[in-house]
Length: 162
Ligand SMILES: Cc1cc2nc3c(=O)[nH]c(=O)nc-3n(C[C@H](O)[C@H](O)[C@H](O)COP(=O)(O)O)c2cc1C
Image 1: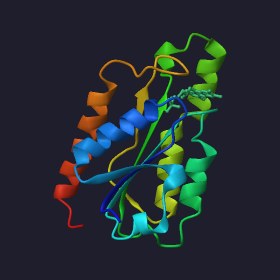
Image 2: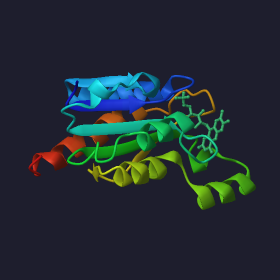
Image 3: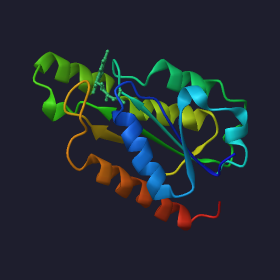
């Protein structure tokens, strides 16, 4: 049971680090791997962050299955925010890959769309955090940027009755 939940998937640990940084900023948040979320974790939920590595321009299947598997209206009245980790466009050398990335994008927008479909109010635009290669590490400053982003969402919510 948590009012603030940060659900993440992570293969090499980079998205987990971002999730932990967001959880720290939120304070009193449960930061949990997507494979371990239980129904009870969603009771009394007020704010839900969901993050995944970007793989093949999309979130990991477990992330999407988690959101799609929620009961109808499970997220009504919940503020949602989506994030991913990714290899930023500037780090990509192949012109063809750049073309594909521009066409298909990253995981964050797909998570955000799924959260909205499940009834969440999206608190702020989703965000992506860069890794320097497939296994990481995170690019410099990304943990701090994740905390700033989460703080921004908290500030926004302070103006909203929730
Ligand atoms: C099979 C595979 C596909 C990937 N596809 C993408 C992609 O489409 N776009 C991208 O930016 N990064 C891609 N990556 C890099 C991942 O985003 C990177 O491994 C991830 O951010 C690391 O997060 P983690 O440490 O939490 O697993 C891919 C990596 C793998 C292994």
